[in-house]
Length: 221
Length: 319
Image (cartoon, rainbow over all chains, first blue to last red; front, side, top):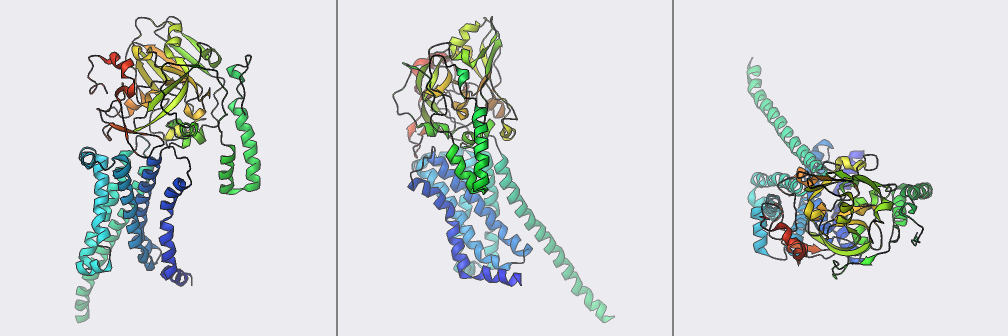
């Protein structure tokens, strides 16, 4: 059966190892041109756009795991969610670091001024900051310490982070907003699915809650 | 295809881009038939991408306005372009402007002038001795380059049409044609691209009517066949692929000002003390350097020549 095959593939330890390496691909694509001394007219923009794009992409992929698990009936996909989320944080961190090192040259005062004065940096900084506690509490130990319910509530911060990331991108571009709007559509779709899923569950729960009450009445008749 | 310019060759003798692109089309078709698929196309694009020598050599004289700073590589200046008619990413114009037809070309000059007329490219390059002017070029985005432009002061052309006393500003317009520039639709700015200068700014000797760079005619992605270069202003003021020049009474509309008036003023003089609302203008990256380590200079370092144009003006208000 194809499902069990897929399930076998998804639960293999090799799949996860390969995916780990694949996720390093974008980093390699950023570093290799420098190693090969390729001519990159604007290296800083090259690095910043590369790391920024991949932060958003990994956020979208991470957010897509839950809907895909349900739609494709592949619960095993959960195995990759933490790693993908951590990669989003990793590329976001690189994105901020290049800004810190190359653009601002460690001028902390300048950075605070940017965060305070420039909304696109404020919102970008917020997007990354929100991911910090999520990265820290991504371990099994922290899930246990917090308890599943509280952990899940905390990790809903990724929704806000993704929205902030899209706004950051939208406010950054000078005029051509097609790409930011594309990400906005993706994030919007993934969040809308969750709202829909939540409403559906609530209705089902309400129905399920109503049924047992009725059953005894029926039984007694 | 290096063509040495001999005396009887005129600007119109430049191999028309259409011919070149037809040849490429054939080669590409043949190549694709054999290699097929995406990877093949990639390889082929690299093989036929125009290198140094795609233009025609121009004879130039030196200019006292040139800086002695290190010139950027030809490759940098031709593969890192803001030319939204050919795509909004910096590497897109180099690919998408290849088939841009720039011959024949005429520039119409009119408005508040005594002798409105049209100039062919052949006429333009003969209006004055061509000078090589090595200018700093500072983009509003925070990067800068040093480019050996070729041309002569815009005032030479302006004086020929004799502006009347009513003329107080000059309005410029770029070529725009959805057929050749299908990506213009997604540029997010109003096209055709329009720019403007105050008359005294336009008549300043530093304002260059530019027909070439690096010893050759302009590559398509850098604004072929004729553009403006205003070195003390942010790069977007230096309009590309000029087709229309009008001397006017009132301040003309300009593309980026229409798009985001609070971010891009009419003057847009390079000024480290007036931040762009979204980023600081205090420093710049001198490409291809990685660090934003160069201090930006007022009027891009051309203050000695142009500061007097703005005496008594509040540069914060008139950004």
